[in-house]
Image (spheres, rainbow, N blue to C red):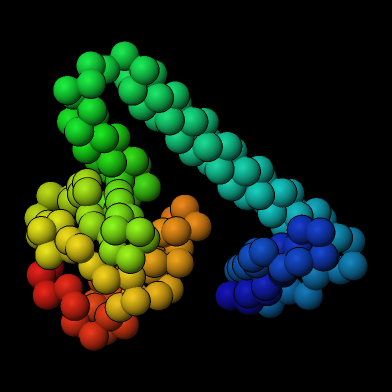
Length: 171
């Protein structure tokens, strides 16, 4: 068999390749290459459409989750707020596929932070009790993000532990 590879391009960018296998040695003509190029481009366009559709579906799902959470917060009794916050953390954490999610509170004139709410996926050890009254100067980058109301994304807890000199011993 003879195999030929043709790049799939979209907007001038290679997004994949189409491999054509012939039963016997074959040299495609210019016309053959044009047809294969059109097929390859059509596949590339369809793949891009699929990615866009998936992104939009995920965005719609996330917006539905946020709407549901917001609606629940509007309807809860004051005594149920902690339960609802924990439920919201669980819903969001499961949706985005993380191991844990937190809400930190800054206190003592912005000199300390405490983990007020924590959700952990099944099988993940909670760390909430070990993250209380943390001095802001110990983690300047973390504290700065909290003070600026920025999200904090920690892809690997072990990297965070190393960066914080093992301050978090659990997990």
